[in-house]
Amino acid sequence: MIHTAKFVMLACVLIAQTAECDTTKRIIMPTNAQEYIAAFRRGEDFTRPSVGIIVGGQPDIAALQSLGRELTVGEPSVRENIVTLLVEAGLRTDPLTPKGTEVLRNPHIIALLAGPGLVKSDLGREAAMDALRKLVRPADLAPFKDAITEALYLSPTEEAFLLVAKAKPPQAKVLVDRLAQSTQWQKVEAAKIARAALGAKDIENEFLALATDAETAKNGQALAQALGPLALIGTPSSLKAIAERLRTPLTIHIPGVFEKSVRLNVLEALLYNFPDQPVLYPNNIITEANYAAAERFCTMTLGVIYTNPSPPFMTYDGYPIPLE
Figure 1: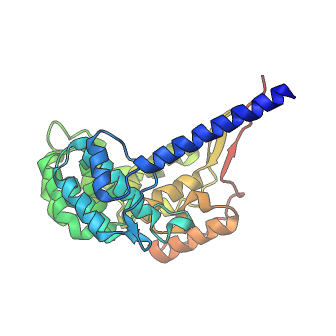
Figure 2: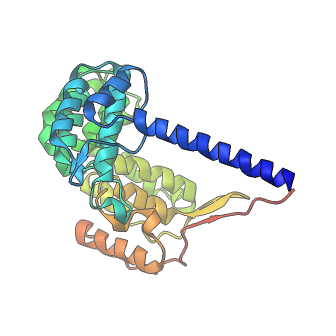
Figure 3: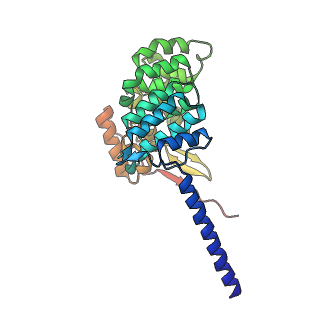
């Protein structure tokens, strides 16, 4: 009985301490754009979720303006944290997020990432490029083709080449060709991908050949790897070649760990270019009907006609950890 009483008293103390800590956290968490900027300047990192910069279910314009001004002049770590904050706010308020997508469509946030986000060659720029490349639809990058081209011109990096490949600014072709022929970049895959994305059919055909090679057609891991560059190239030919493999029976098998259908890799490669399509997200594949919905999208969008029978339904199987 005495031990029980002591335990209850100890539990109450711990709960009180926890509540006090939680209250402290709530007090010191930034509640507006200026407080976020001040915290980032102090060396603090952004902690989800964003607080105080969302009004009426959407990022507040005034807050975005303040963050944009700091994004233009801030130190690298500050800029990187602002990018992370902007991306989180954009994803959290997008109507498609509850449907399992990760797509950034807020035009004000995209403009900040593609404008102030690219003005300095630092961690902030790389974070902005990564978000623009992976989360934004190609059509939404179109208004910023000049800024994306200039970013590559001022400071070529692999991320900059890949962002150019995603946005496909025609005015970048001469620049990309010149850089890709230099000693520094001629053997770098990102530069080759950018050239292929901007119309170098000979290079694109090399990547297409890897995906259709006889040995690749028998090896799930090899096929999954071959799909990656095609997704980054993102031309109609490359996207169609990816989509045509949506009925592959191949799997990636790591003994004792997991087995994964390469059909999921096909979907991952496609959603890079169509992040606003819930039917392409592997986590949304629950039944064969979900694969069929993805196929319908590929038929309507890319003109792919499926004639081979669907393989037995599979997504991902993890093997149980053996008990010692």
